[in-house]
Amino acid sequence: MTTPDFGQAQRVVVIGGGPGGYEAALVAVQIGAEVTVVDSDGLGGSAVVTDCVPSKTLIATAELMTEFSGAPELGVQFEDHEGDPAHQLTVDLARVNARVKRLARDQSDDIGQRLESEGVRVVTGFGRLDGPGAVEVTLPDGGTERLEADAVLLATGAAPRTLGTAEPDGERILTWEQVYDLTETPSHMIVVGSGVTGAEFANAYLALGVEVTLVSSRDRVLPGEDADAAEVLEQVLTRRGMNVLSRSRMESATRDGDEVTVTLTDGRTVTGSHCLLALGSVPKTRDLGLEEAGVALDDGGFVKVDRVSRTSARGVYAAGDCTGVLMLASVAAMQGRIAMWHFLGDAVTPLDLGQVSSNVFTAPEIATVGCSQRAVDAGEVPAETVRLELAGNARAKMQGVRDGFVKLFARPGTGAVIGGVVVGPRASELIHPISIAVAESLTVDQLAHVFTVYPSMSGSIAEAARRMHHSPLD
Image 1 (cartoon, helix red, strand yellow):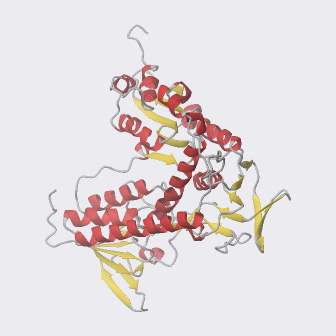
Image 2 (image 1 turned 90 degrees about the horizontal axis):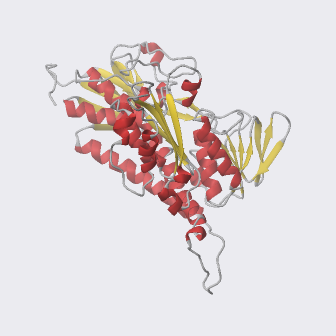
Image 3 (image 1 turned 30 degrees about the vertical axis):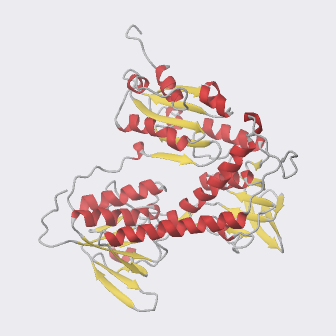
């Protein structure tokens, strides 16, 4: 990679050490910039320290519990020490959460070592803009350091949204960042919010053997996801014993000793041992000197950026959850890389959200990429659609999988794949061939003609593509 001739190394300061920040730093130093990362929350940001890595580690334990629950169908029986059948699995939540936090720390340490080895300076402290060309850092000891910058990247992330009528106490009323301090398994977890975060935690605690009530203000879980996929998931969750309260909005959450009562706006109440608030996120953009530096925010406080991560202030870029573009670690990382490629004059392609694949880590998982069913139904995107149930897949039958499907969207006439949905075990892995097809504008015939292993879940992707074939005589 050729370093641009700027005369001297460009000075880049990154505020925030999450995926948007540290990935940007690695790109910038690779191209030849002098890079400083200012971080106050731990390298890796919420994605590594308090959100993505911890939650998916917890979910990994839940997945194992879910798989064990299907063991009898596959001929596996558990026995106690006396040889009698054992019918119940239990979880040691203290050990689970200790492992969660250990893995998060290890991942954060790995990121720090990588940055150090690449020559990136890391400053621990709170950074704020001092105009568009400098960052003032408040250090842990109360001192300050001023960093001059030719470019600044804001990657400060977001925090859990809370309400004044449901203040978290870190013990019984919790945000998703606080659940890893639990040492005893809840007897009844009330999850408020049925978006991705709420659905994932509700599913996880249910699998861990906890009674779960999911409070959803909408008519179904996962209102922002594919409706067919959400319907399958809700059917599975209710079949496993979850109490889903749809069209129910929380008024307040209060604690009385070891009990938490959630009061709904219609007067109903739900009482449990714990309450997890999954009410969305708010950007961490306050007290950063943004307005003074000319950085525009939207009505929600998110930093406005274009498709190459530029803000309204010259030389100031932003990436990740603080922009509100699409709150995924992969998107944050790409925004950060794009920002540095753009600033340092390297080849750059603007962010294309149509190629982003995402996954809901429930059981079954829900993975999506590209065009959505909602856009097709609304007439926004002309597309042909095929849905193939996994119940007919030979590998699925072997593994006792009955719930899930593969759905493909293709352009009429050309057959170009423009989107897809996978619902099933490890959908996060199965979506990859569809993501490649979307990114490379492959046709359903090209996707169908690639060899797949038999038997395999991925065979259903090729089969769905074959069902969309048009004969030259059509």
